[in-house]
Length: 129
Image 1 (spheres, rainbow, N blue to C red):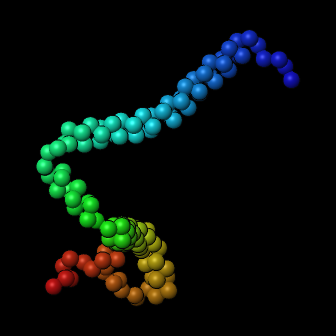
Image 2: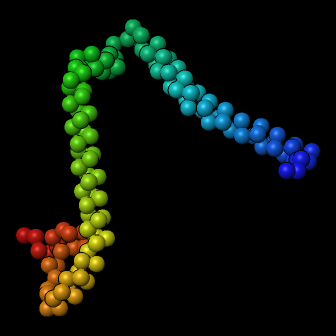
Image 3: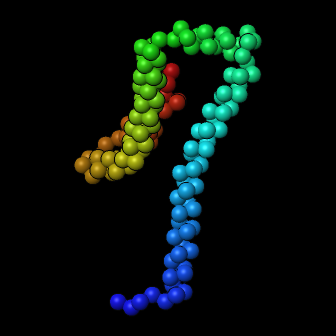
């Protein structure tokens, strides 16, 4: 194996330096953002200290909030989001497969009529009462 030239070694060094700087920023930016958010939160709480405001009312509400209720809201919201995503995925899958299924059904029975559903498997608006 040939020994690398001085120019190649210099470019390798530059590349390594740039790579290290990139890695540093990749680690530094999220932590700096977290510190900035904590500082802004600290300053906002400090400016409200001793004042009865809507923030106090909100803190009282959060103080009465139970962990079990919070978990119930999280799981309930997660279930709703899951249901919405699943419905969209199901419609996308039906739309993707509808043409192929109709073609295969026509091959089996050429006199077969269409169900006249939309490509996503929904009832046509004019058929709804």
